Length: 113
Length: 115
Image: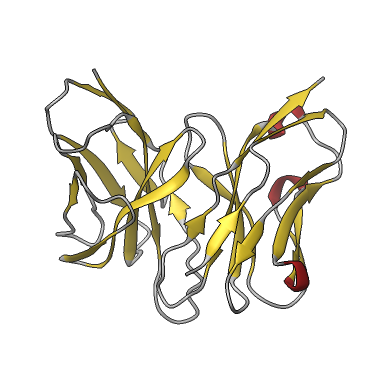
């Protein structure tokens, strides 16, 4: 079965600084990979997704993520963080065939002035 | 507007009472899901349904029940058998078949507090 690890429970960055959130997955083949964002008390919103092809994917709100097969990773990046990016971020892996997505435990991002 | 509607957004109940959370979607999605979210635990799958009148247990189904009588609706009942029901509950849906990737669309969630 597939699994997802987000090693960082909580990250604090200064506004304007760059951001990288880590995600590692376990699966025998290339999975479908997703990053979602959740503001407090809200549902999850899709930031970006990787299915195949170009390993660098662009998403909404200026986020991007890079799939690295050799490292089983799908890290999320943003060159300059805004205070409104403070939220919880979830990485998820899917394997198709109608199997439900598996989510990581999330990384909470705090942004300081 | 197409989307997923969860209600109520906030719910308070006394211990020992059953409660039902509503989830309705007008996206014509085939599959619907219920997740439970607790701080530091991520999202844990409770139940899911891929077709009307059929559903499967997820990782933490004990103390919960569901029904899927219509494609658009997937209510979740939190029964008195659920030991620690206070949590944030999220409903999601997706299409199936073809080149389905499993991408989920989420509702806004329901926060249940048991007093």
